[in-house]
Image (cartoon, rainbow, N blue to C red; front, side, top):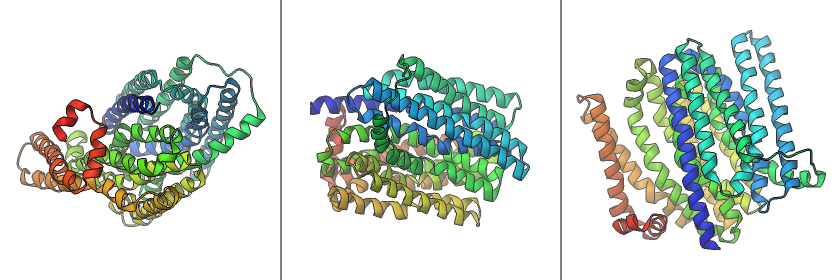
Length: 486
């Protein structure tokens, strides 16, 4: 049984990786093309409107969907009840966004932003009617079909957004891309599920589902809305152009989070929910695995972003390149919170998970707000500095709530952090030495040497300093690759 669960978890993670990679790949390409075609002010205006829709989206994407996943056996009445609750919530939240958009337009006189906000109110509605159906599919570990549906939807939405930008539709190009992706994903999932809840509804089931869903919903919203609320603060304090720079920089962060981190994080809850008694032993392993995957990518992106973004988008986007490294360092705050929260929920400590998310959110937003008084660079520094609060708090909670060894947890981080820091310094130094080289050649050489540097330091330095953690990481690799790294 344990072997089957591990195999299903690994296979699910693989298809989740492909799903998120497909979606984020299409979105990142669309964002960069639209950014190159639009002025920073136009891109920033559309980004602010979409951020409102996506800030409230976790309320309907998580919660009842997770409650359905945790309900191991299919129950039509329970699933139908969850669907109606989530669909109603999505409709209500969408209505609130519409009213808020109209009120904001009337008060501020910014009619353009008000209309864009009304359009983005459909994002939580589309998510609300599809999230429970997606949860039913995920409960069966059927990630392959979801990967196809969501990747195709993202590609079609990317094409539509780029076409709108080419047609000169300004900020509407960004909003069309975001809204259309949500609509197409919802339609694809509903067709894929081949399931209609009917008019079945159970009040006792609604109470049971809500007890599971509400803490998850709160935790997901607190954690998932951080990037979008940060963008709103930057746009509100520093203007739409700064919001445009910040949004382009956050796309690098979001792409790496969704492609590399989300597949691992999304499998933590179902995996730990089925074996909660092993949390103390397995939680440091989850941290080490995510750090090994994420830190080289984020630190590498931080090193090359100042050179890469102006080449891709033009000199108007230099500020985005200078902002991106600070956002990439925000991974040091993401890893501890994102891995610990689902483990706490699986252990029945959902309120503790919510408090961790709230602390992370409030600390980060206050740092960004304070930094905004000094400009975009200082605001972006606040995005990364929230790790000062999240890392020690997460380590303390893991020790107290799960019985995790803090020493072992520190080794789990250090296994990847040591080579990632060395790689970052090496790549930055190489790019400065190669300043007179052709830009693309310089970047290609720096990336190749940086990847080799990370692999060598991990194999011959970290493996000897932290042998127990390294041995665990090898266990997740295919046997043919494992023998070359042992």
